[in-house]
View 1 (tube, rainbow, N blue to C red):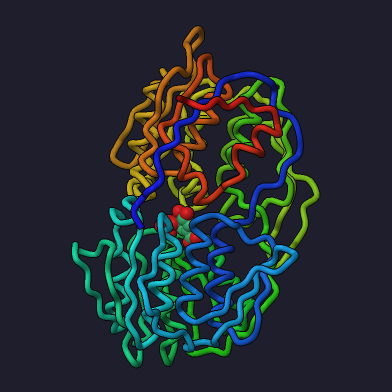
View 2: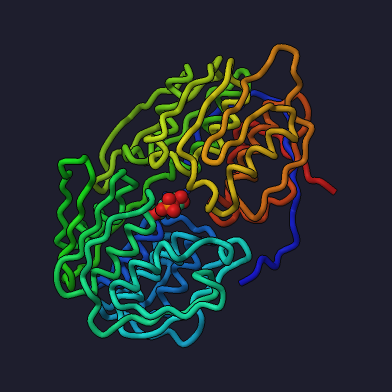
Length: 449
Ligand code: S3P
């Protein structure tokens, strides 16, 4: 529940060029959804390449508490015997989501479509994050909410007997909110409609169709996506193959671009266009980045991403690109620190409510390492490297945020002095093999005593 493990600081410093081919673990968004959709489908869903990290394992445990049978077979695949749409059972104990925003928010949607109560808890980071964004539409659908502090964890929700199918226009660009409403809509008789003015990752839509739901997406006259889901579908178990997570690949890719002499390929990376904003931005910065072996797998585009050390230049990242790279701004800021000229990032309001206030955490981390930046309410300008400036030497506060930890460890690999992060335990929430894979490419890590 709370973050019990003692903090584990770690340092990186410049050493070898990074060279080699790696595969990163499965995509976190698709992994969570595979377990959830398997739990509400009839039959046995088999998941290959599931991300075996704390966030996703918490979702697996929650699905088991809700009545699904969740096992890992001898070949490393996960198998979920589902209960069918509307068939989840009232859990006997609290659902503990640890650090996981996606797991907790999407499961609130699932539970909201069932006529029983469940209690949600999480670690200190998750307990600070706003849940009203999910609870407000669920309340419109008839869900009761009891929370100790306003719309924060720990909280309990109870779904109505007959959830009301609603039309909901997203007030912020959030795939989690969109997904929670759609998942509650699975239990509603009639059509649940979500309107998203700005497109966010569409794994829920694609996968629900794959599991047999009737769901249609249109673009309206204003360019908004209108998603209509027919409630109470018959969902059927599927075989899912989870592609590599582009948000994890991002760390090795940026490291390859900023460490002199590097040549790194990350194989089997998900290239869904609503997830590839970072790659597009890096190309605009002048990155030597290419995609080989592009193919389709399970309805998603995947490929091998190759980067070689590059002279980067600062760019303006358009705010409308934010949803397609929302988790990548911390690592983009590290690339920007090595670029020639400023990099301007706008439309970053959602970064304030991630595992930490990422805008503030990145800005403080950059400053601690000699990189000038300007933090606005929803923007960040990172000054590129100035001739003769020394980068590194700082200690970074990670605030229970895995992506802050990994981003600044990457900074150290190309800095003039070692970079220390105050805690690496949270890396296990999304990318437990991060250190091993980076060491395999030649990265130098040092324990801090
Ligand atoms: C996710 C959506 C995003 C992202 C998160 C995963 C998802 O969150 O930051 O890591 O799987 O739906 P928001 O919906 O809050 O933007």
